[in-house]
Image (cartoon, rainbow, N blue to C red):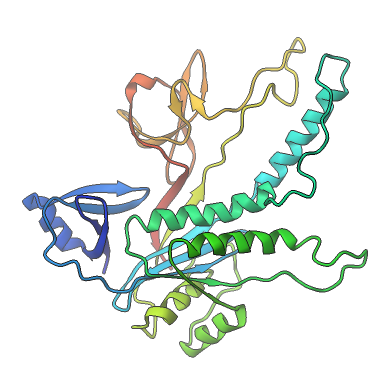
Length: 342
């Protein structure tokens, strides 16, 4: 059975309701439907009959390529999410550094190089921060639809074996610092609990649940089974998953503005590249086009127009859409695909 998130007139989350009841509310004018980044919700136009809340937990199974989130109470599993991790930031920062150094090595005017101001500073590396910020963004999105009580995370630890060339955890230290930052941010919003990997396996074995070794698959058994058992450990109520539908989230990759492209075009002229706006529209924004329906905005060509992309597949639908033909719906930074059953 599918459940629809409910919010009151002030956008405060209430307990989810069944799809049939939500439809009755909409037809009678008691509620207004809306979409929140791939999840269908309703907003009550009247005062709710009851504000009693059940504990709702979010289980998180972090991963290097894929990760899972499950929203669950003792009665129902409301949402299973499998999200792609942010993996491109490290290469983008490296390319930016190489291009900056190349420009300074040319026989052309440039400012004198400054000393590295980041040495010995307490900061997260860009790639690490992007990975953990992505998880936090998903949690902030979920707490606008569900009254979350607790977040349970499968704890991951760095390998403490000494490398051949010395330096304990030199490679894995960003993981530990990023995890610590993430836990600190969660503690500001929710109750936080952690479980070790072997404890998650014990919980899975107690319920006779199997996990597939195909980590890149879109099945419930790939990652969501772990996030489900973590959430179920806190709220209880089930001995087997009652909902194995999956909502897949894929973060959009935005290219920062570059002074010029990496390679010169004909005539030795380098065109500008990147940016976050396309002819006045913020890239990634959800728009409604009279021909292509609901999609998101991509790049642009000055003489043709903007590119429109499919929300489900990311495939480019056109390159010559006019801004006047696009109705802006909301800002957006990820795409999603329809729920699937494993």
